[in-house]
Image 1 (tube, rainbow, N blue to C red):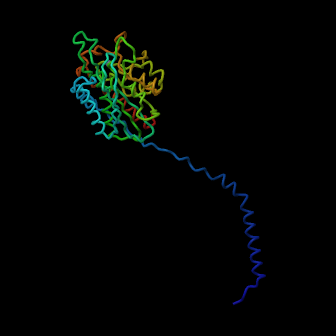
Image 2 (image 1 turned 180 degrees about the vertical axis):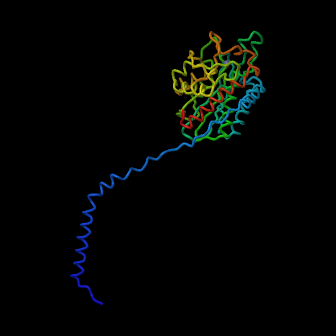
Length: 342
Ligand SMILES: [Zn+2]
């Protein structure tokens, strides 16, 4: 075996060093060019799996109205009122919602103190993007527009039970056809015990309380819609003035959606002046732009229809076709908002 001399080893190292530096010098000018031609990595895309809009079941919504009417008039400080609140909570829990009963005292303009409760039901409470849907659930303590029995409370099948019934059915739909979006369904109490000849603040006591005591500090939903009187025969939903001031794009989305679903006869694109309803206080005090879908089929001083604050606001005034028009439109509104179509 022959030993390599130090000199020859040094020579090898020198030759290798020269070769390596040549290679480096030769390759180096091409490196920036190579880097430029490599396409940048694609930005991370968030793909939302599209969910088909389910059918809204108007028969089920009708039964939810019947159930509420069967409790009796839902006037605060009555057994019917208490039983109905408990039933709402049970229903929402059955559909997997997180429910809070927001109890409060409300002073009626006639002096009575009402034991009142807003029902706040949250679907997927941890989801940051949230849709707020609301309705009032109490029914009026007197039939002041009626010719007979003016001091007796009304059934409030349309004015009270219809909005909550549509939203309960949407809750049931969400449980059966899940979405990765938060939905808050709020039932306001003591909306309809106000003074027709008095200040607007005598109305909507539940939404006034909620707006000042939000169930989450700084709560601000992505979009917010109120339903009121959405179940009667011959209902007509016009673009309400305050909704148009604070959320005209949402109004247009809903009315266009309704037309595309074939409900243009119910959703009339004519604009109407503003109405004192829960959304007014939600807008003013919680700064949440809220749209009101409320039936105003008539012109003049009594726009809400013949049954308004009369005893004929009972189960016979309810029309499943109206429930379907509103319920299907609102179901599509929720699912298409999630899908990114709206
Ligand atoms: Zn009313």
